[in-house]
Image (tube, rainbow, N blue to C red; front, side, top):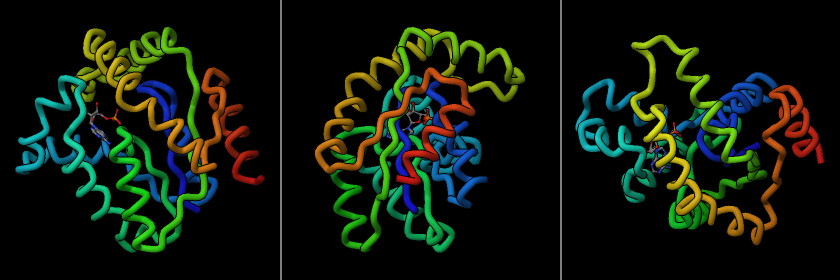
Length: 191
Ligand code: AMP
């Protein structure tokens, strides 16, 4: 089973991905984690994307598409994967559809976590408070977060109608408690 998790920063995608890993043994592919790892390593890619990631802007589509298509065809994804943080633009979504169809890989569900944007600032503030200073993300400060939410609205939200048209989109109330969100996701997957 292959799943795409969509939702703004702080919607709970990471938490739900963890649930899906333990419940279904899926492989989580978080493009944000991959980029942060590259930055940490100081690789060429890391150097190229650091300023963009820290500022809360989107890394160019060609870089992201290359990164995810290489990753998704590795053998550890054969048992199913969760895309967390990709796609983030309509072009990424369209290219993903093409690449996967060439490789005869199917997306089974696109799950969107619907949350009030006004509550996300609180969630991210809490996430920052609960995280040790040295592990805190550069892009979790208030100004950058507001920018990331705008970027989400402008560039990522238009993906929702794209997947709706493909008949893959299921929207879940992300304002519920994490356990309840997991239960709702379970119900969608069992349909
Ligand atoms: P995340 O951990 O998913 O919130 O991603 C953190 C940051 O990584 C984002 O704010 C972007 O700068 C970058 N990023 C992650 N995934 C993508 C993507 N699919 N397209 C463009 N930029 C991305």
